[in-house]
Amino acid sequence: MVSTPTRTTAARTAGGTSATRTAGSRTPAAPAVTPADRVRAWNRGFWSALEGTGKSRNGSTYYLILGSTLALTAIGIMMVLSASSVEAIAAGESPYSAALKQGGFAAIGVFAMFVLSRVNVVWLRRIAWLVMGLAIALLGLVLLVGRSALGNQNWIDVGPFTFQPSEAAKLALALWMATVLDRKAKLLHQWRHALIPVVVPGALAVLGLILAGNDLGTAMIVMIIVAAALFFAGVRLYFFGIAGAFLAVFATVLAITSPNRMCRILSWTGQSCADGSNLNYQSTNGLYGLASGGWFGVGLGQSRQKYSWIPEAHNDFIFAIIGEELGLVGTLVVLVLFAILGAAIYRVVVAQHDVFHRVLAGAIMVWLLGQASVNMAVVTGLAPVIGVPLPFISYGGSALLMSLCAIGVVLSLARAQMDPGMQPKKMLRFGPAAFANSVRSARAARAASKPSAKKPTTKIPTRKTPASKNRTKA
Image (tube, rainbow, N blue to C red):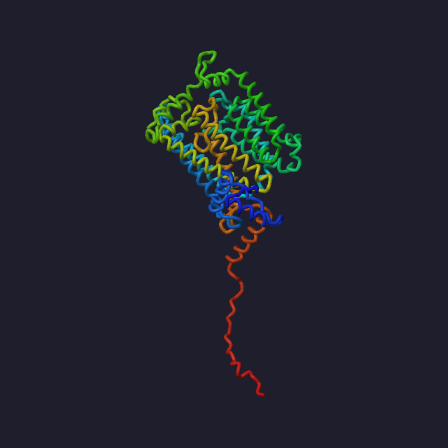
């Protein structure tokens, strides 16, 4: 007698259930939910609840971009006043001079931002080539009549103010590349169409003129803008690997052939330069300022590093003054505002179906966030000292004005995604139809304002006859 092995109740139940199933009634097992899937689902649910869906979008993205930009600009004016007041007094100037100039450019920039946010971005495409040509002409003019400061020839004096054409070239390049890549969208899978006429005549002309002024930091930001535009246009990824290798070799050659740049790199790694100078002095004192700030800072206006310990404290190293006076909390507030700005602009980018809109918004996003990341990396000692300002916060009218104009372009795209009934009204209307409507409105207004030449006619009241009297007798 052979005993048969027995199974547990659960096994018998499973076996019986599987035995009664037919081949056609089997359902595939549900895939396992990974943590990445949960994060994606939470992200989609969060933005859907915040923005709304479909045609009922409530414009939260628009107001997140607007609010974070205005907050960063206000923080910048306040910190420029604090960081520049000491050196201004030492130079015999008003302690409010730099802050007043920054505030004036902020007012102009905010007005330009609101105007651009109400203009259809498609109209900017028509002036892309003109703007690009003007930017290249101004960059060439800098090399002829420009002013040099701290080893870089970047500025043109316009009366009591100075203008930096390289900042305007960033926005012009983003607009021009978006226009060209949109026309060549179906051919970008071929590398020669991705390079010509984008990188070779346009981007390299801007890069060459900026490098001729000895400004490697701005040239790096321009290269980031070019890479972002090509990425959002859909250029194949292997192209970025090849281009990155060439750029790495090119950057290495530029560093080796410049004693100043080589000294900056050696100082950053803790070594001494050939002439014994220490170009890492600015970064070291910036770290001292961040360390002395603690959690809540030493108080607004109470910085000690701004007493000529940090050169250009109100410009490239203003983030160190924020950390010293407002502490870790203040620096985290700035980081959170940039994070909100980046996330909101990214929502605008991914919602675009047109290549021109997507490339333009994506290039602006990478420009502002990439420049902010490079500036903070320099201040915290994660990168060698490079002259790159912190967007919206560092002192500089040209940089602030162009950054606000770029945000205006993104706001125009964000406004187009809102429900039509919730969109802010347009300030400017262009085109033949709009012009004809305005002419008709003006004529109607003039006609309504003129008194009528005809004499008013008096209406004689008539007596109504009851309906019963009009009936004929049968």
